[in-house]
Amino acid sequence: MIRIAIVEDDAEVREQLVEYIRRYERQFGRMFELTTYADGDEIISDYRAVYDIILLDVQMARMDGMTAAEAIRKVDPDVILIFITNMAQFAIRGYAVDALDYVLKPVPYFAFSQQLQKAVGRLRKRQQTFLTVPAEGGFRRVAVDTIYYLESDGHWVHFHTEDGKLTAPGSLKAFEEKLAGKPFARCNSGYLVNLAQVIALQQNTVQVGPFELQVSRPRKKAFLEALTDYIGGETK
Image (cartoon, rainbow, N blue to C red):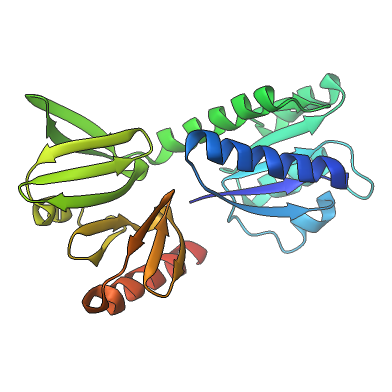
């Protein structure tokens, strides 16, 4: 899951950005993990390189966004920075810290969503691996990180992805073997879940992106262990 930090000292703007991200999630079927900060000094205090994208207000009361960005870049060369500002000339300085771009206040949703889409695309290019799937008399390359889960259906397998549903001939076991070494685990005999897309787990139900799937009793222990190992590896 993509982790986003919002650093904005105006509470109203901060909440607006949170709502924009939630709106983006509903629009594109993507989920993000959000953390908010009320000033630049808050995020750089004991900063760890755990975020994929940081939205930074340029002008803040205690520490401005540019100073915070310079401190972040000393320990995290990879995080994507997007500045939020009411003056374009301030944002231009962002190129010195390799910022992706900037959004002008008052922040319109369309401009914001375009920048977020650009950031998500850059992340995908960095990390993307593909699975070759037989389809429509030929083959189709499916980006592994876009897969929510695979569903067994007799001699067919349904791929539920961010880009829609794809059906391919074969067995779930065969595709499971192709995905060995990737963060996938079965929550029951018929579903192979992308652990990176898991949002929540409650009792015998797991939320995978926009889907809720049943976790069977025989598979529950192994699935929980795989999910715990994955989450633990993410936070190290």
